[in-house]
Image 1 (cartoon, rainbow, N blue to C red):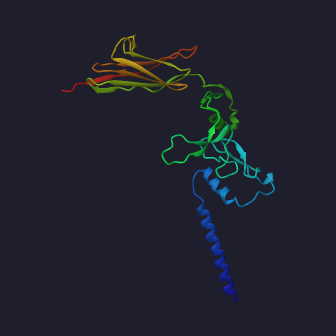
Image 2 (spheres, rainbow, N blue to C red):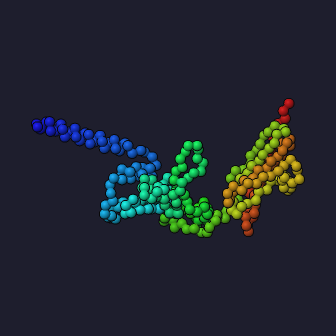
Image 3 (spheres, one colour):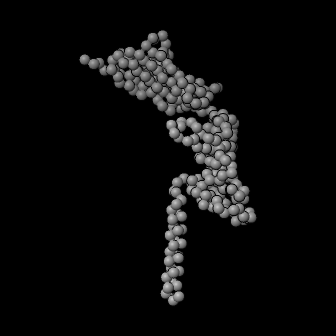
Length: 269
């Protein structure tokens, strides 16, 4: 075979290898990190585990849920966070393992017809925690994420349960305009721990609402451990009703925060 023919053959071979490699790279979908890691694991599935050499293991960084051993039980890799898809069967190693204080469970809530439940990392505890930074964490998994994001801060758990906090109006009542004869609803949402009380008053008067007025009622709905949601219903709203909202009582201390809301009406002729 002549030299030009040999060079042409080698060129064609390298071109085919390049195209195959390019197609293989494009076959890996772009998405969240844990999905990309899953496809990488799938591509490497055909390779059997070799002798473990810890000095050759890459150092995982930014692992908010901690680290877990890889499929060969050799190198450490980032664990999956709460809410991420995980491998329910430990014989598989596609999505990855859950991190500290997490367990892989099938999520069957809020499924639409025909949908298949997916295994997700779920926190083992629902107990709220108070951190040494004075912030309340919904559970240990959220606390762990913040701790791992900045280990130098030396964040610790101050105690179980929410941190004590002054009342703060998250969603205040708003001024309302309505047509004479229609009902009126004022709403308010207050954040505090321990739970604050909410008082409704008519502006300029010390009397608490609803009092003995048959046209006014109050409904209270605790939302979570530190949020109180309350509504003031005014039936047959044919009156001007300026209101002041006050929250108070927090264990041994008393705090007061107020928010004003007015009610005006329009006559239809």
